[in-house]
Image (cartoon, rainbow, N blue to C red; front, top):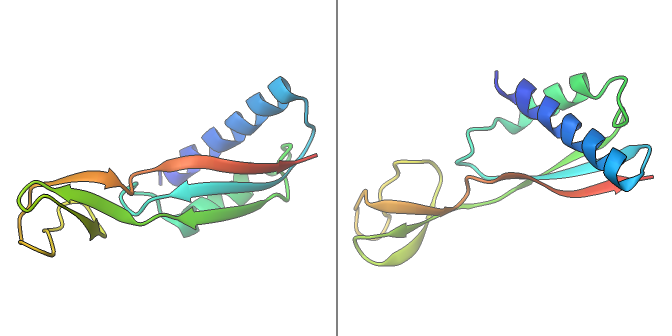
Length: 113
């Protein structure tokens, strides 16, 4: 389960930012996650709760913003919605899709005190 290492990485990022910016506690974290990032949001929530115990983010709420997947179809030169890698183009059936959105995993916002 790589979500545990992702949650640990988020906590490390929070601790680094607390040191750099001088806050003592994290009350909320907003993460943007795309469907192509291979991250299970429910597993990440579970892991986040586990790894934040005893840290400056203990009890912080985790908000997950799910982004849509999009790709550029080289076959028909159109931007299309996709749900997973290796989907075919819904317009022309081509598999020549270049992902343009949906593989993100980033901290968008923090609520701190």
